[in-house]
Amino acid sequence: MSETTRFAPSPSGHLHLGHAFSALFAQEQAGGGRFLLRIEDIDSGRCRPGYEAALLEDLAWLGLVWEEPPRRQSDHLADYAAALERLNAAGLIYPCFCTRREIAQEIARSASAPQGPDGPLYPGICRALSKAERRARLAAGARPALRLEMAKAARVAGPLFWQDAGEGRIQAKPEAFGDVVLARRDIGASYHLAVTLDDAVQGISLVTRGRDLFEATHVHRLLQALLDLPVPRWHHHALVTDEAGRRLAKRDDARSLRGLRAEGVTPGEVRARLKSACGTVGN
Ligand code: GLU
Image (cartoon, rainbow, N blue to C red):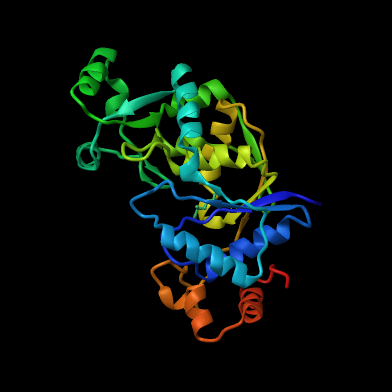
């Protein structure tokens, strides 16, 4: 079946074998359809233009061909702001003025701190602020993050399901994440918001990505419902590990594609290595 798929790296380091697998997997899953590239660079503190140039070069070296031009998230901040405005108009988001420290202290104080897939849930401190308090803090120059009021949003959306190639039909349980951040105070959008909107704008029919992002899909499915976006299907693939079974990380530069290339490894050898490690990427 022909699909529209994408590979969506963040230029916050050099690509490693795990990225190579993910990119090749996405291209393969397009099945002759469209294969797109997206540069997820909204986290300006971590992303560098030099890494973007390097990743484009590494992907081309690997033999990947994507439709030009790639979509760069930092070029579309206005789209994310418009989506936030829509959620705001629906009364589904609220400003959060808490520092990390305040959140940690509040969690430490409470007898039971519910855990979500990304750690302890936000204890809801700013959800209870009155309009007047919010106005006063904004007037005093505080710059808030924006959080989704999860219980309300899940209620508004009603029961939701999504289709995963490996796991079948799944009921979305976004409540497990609590009041997720949709815009950080320093960055106008969070990963969850940007990825969901971009997949819709790019017309992605099959979202392929690593198993580590499986849980995030619960939140994305909810955002699609709240923003009336089309619903793709998902294929979360296994992660590439090293010989000791550890997940590869960007800091592990020995495994970077450039490192391998400098050692004289060929793109064909990279593909063969990934094929024997993961079994699914063709040649
Ligand atoms: N940008 C994300 C990453 O580098 C991937 C996002 C996605 O595929 O949904 O891990």
